[in-house]
Length: 366
Figure 1 (spheres, rainbow, N blue to C red):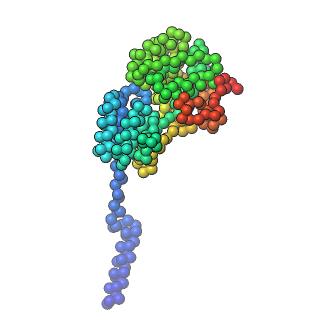
Figure 2: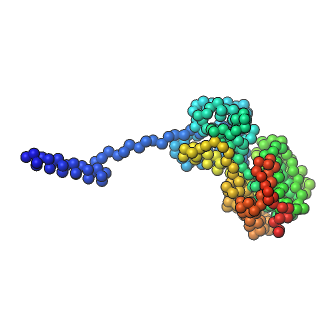
Figure 3: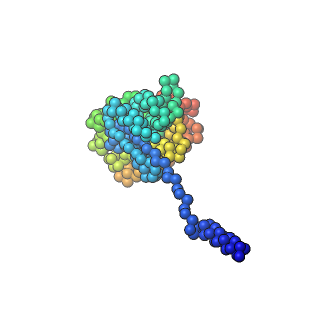
């Protein structure tokens, strides 16, 4: 009797084991919910269709990719209000606070040191302590604007019919001088005798002044202008359409703004840098230090390097569109590969990046 009962129990245990192994009656293992990360972008007024909008686009890209993040974008033109907002986000326990622009570096560094448990990132600068050391909870997102501007300088020189091209910057500051010098080097690499005329708006949000400067340059014989001026650059693009001449956009793809008159855009992929930072946060490997985005990282340069946009090819003059496709794009791609490989380099205005093999004037034809 005892033996029969024992066999019955053993048989029941075996059946239960088989059912459990096949997922029959066992309860599923309880899943641990993923941590929710909170990310804030503190920024000036959006709507420039250029630099600032690119940063916000990075937030939207991350929201679409990662279901376990909560995001907030706080816009304010007043710098003091931006500081208050960044501090408030850190106080509320946000995991990552992102600020934008070289002018925000000092106060972002100060707040980051007050809230060591939050991580801070800044576009276009680095976050440092009083001794000049990079913060452990601060990530700088910097770009090789000189390399990207070199590529559109080449395009302007190759497509110019007057041998005179222009550059209009937002503010006369070292960062925008980096754009200018890279552009000049790219143009001279194509044609050492080309003339480059420069002008400065004095603001990033004054398209009226941008247009006035552009019209003056066009009257002086310039036929292509590179606008690195934020919202002010929209005035340059408008002037090119008004005069029936040409312009080059910046930071985001801007060829659609004046189809057939904007030859190309110098992409500065702030959206990519913001997205990468949030991705690292979610993966648990976001660290302090500075990240550099250049041609090698495929994060700057003429839009056609990345298969972005066909507006000018579809809407520009046939002869220029053909030359752009057949000659300009291949030449720019070849130069970009030389820069990536280290065969040649672009001289950096602020001398952060060394250059021991600078591109030589007239070097494209050699």
